[in-house]
Amino acid sequence: MMRDKSYAAVMGRKNEIMKKAVGIDYSVFESGGISFDYERMMADAGYTLEEIQRIQAEVHVGNTPLIELKNLTALARKLAPEGKGARIFIKDEACNPSGSFKARRAATAVYHAKKNGYKGVIAATSGNYGAAVASQAAMQGLKCIVVQECYDSKMTGQPEILEKQRACEALGAEVVQLSVGPELFYTFLCLLEETGYFNASLYTPFGISGVETLGYELIAQFREKTGKDPDKVIVTHAGGGNVTGTARGIIKANAKNTEVIGASVDLSGLHMASDTDFNRKSFTTGHTGFGIPFATWPDRADVPRNAARPLRYMDRYVLVKQGEVFYITESLAVLEGLERGPAGNTSLTAAFALAQEMDETETIVVQETEYTGAGKHPLPQLSFARANNIEIKFGDPDEEIPGKNIILPRHPSMIKARDFDLNKARTSYIKNCVNACNATKINQEDLRFLIEDTKSNEDFVSQVLKELNIEVLRKTGGKT
Amino acid sequence: MNAKKGDWVQIHQIVLEPSGRAPTVPEDTKKVPLELWVKGYALHDSKIGENVEIRTITGRKASGELTAVNPSYKHSFGDFVPELLQIGKQVKGILYGDEYDER
Image (cartoon, rainbow over all chains, first blue to last red):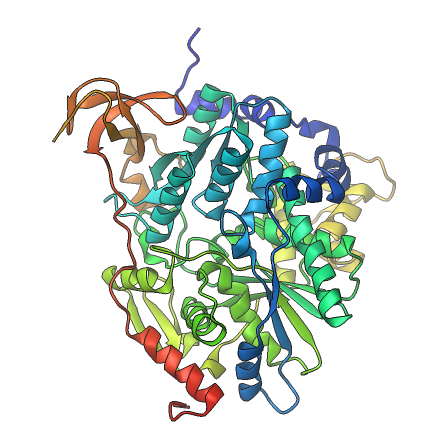
């Protein structure tokens, strides 16, 4: 019998399709309320760090170099007060087979798909993850479909996404391209149902545990170079997997005093599902349009429980401007001889500013770079912006308005890491949890979960719940 | 342009008409359809704008309006942006003491 392929019917079969396509029964980790057993999900459905190291080594993923950026550090010290200017290091993840850290996520997802007898993998992504899955599928002999949001209604494509289409196709994948809109998910479900392929979601335990090796490796390499743990590790934050996986790896390496900082490009004011705003942004990832929604409601992802939970791991969250990232990308090329993609340099831009607040004896590690090339480089991204009537000029980056202008800092001393109030994000997250369950009362288990999932404390969570008029039941076992 | 059976082509589909778009999408997006493009081998002769059936690289069958034969990649390094040169000069000036520090 032909199945009903209408939008409503396919969306109605979402859970059934996903269960087949991911192979995880998420219900066993659920409590029935707000909480779920995150660590059990990561342990039961994922792989151990040793297993992942072995899987990734087989497919030439990981063990990327850790480089000290001596010239950028020297520049930061020229701008910093006397005695300030931490040493800046970078993990050159562009050296992975597909040119970004996403190879780590793809390696484990594709391995898992193959092990479980799937003939192919599908990923919904406009980012580096597409090429990563395509590359791993090629290496491990599976078929691959990448679904990407690429064009506006005039069929004008973002140069960065067009390059990712080319990369995916070059690696043997089929690329299904869509115009702007969240209904991409409907096409994605149709393809999963039609092909029976594995959903190589960015947000499964396999994908996230694949990034743990990055954090673990980084600490080991850093200790070998300096004999110490880094004071800060800074991670470009979009969907949350980079932060989550890296931080989990750092914890597994037992680096207890390393602060984990998330960084995103500030694209506030641009609507991510807007046809007209689509080509008015000059970053397609690493920005607040993903960073904030995925921090405040991770379970919006394409799986029932997202393994990427950034608020659980972030100690601090900072924002930088588009113009600042282009400035630092150019500086990395001419001062360090490393030509890398702009989006991957988001955290480097923040690190350049943060280093100036830190002592010379301290250290900060930027945990990624990404490949660069046609479409995915300051030249095409800035000239595309210019063609879309975005003004590009030198000035004060604080005056940048996403979608209207890109302000290249008049002087590198104007580059800033602007703190985003994490308590604001934590409050929204708690509110979203309560609303998703229609809860009026929560139990002790839920309370503990909320504390852990927001990396906060009982006083903070209790206060937020009080403001939401949610009663916390004293004894464990009370249901919502 | 015509496509012969076996040519590598790109097709276009309307996935959702404007009236069928999700209630959550912004107003500007609601005014336009959700469109899809995919490439594959033409399974029969066709003309641009006509419906054609294709087999994609993974072996799926799909059909839609023929939009291109041997579709090429048009993205590039774009127009030159001279401001980038200025950034290079500035940071080298600050670091190596040339005359370019404009603070």
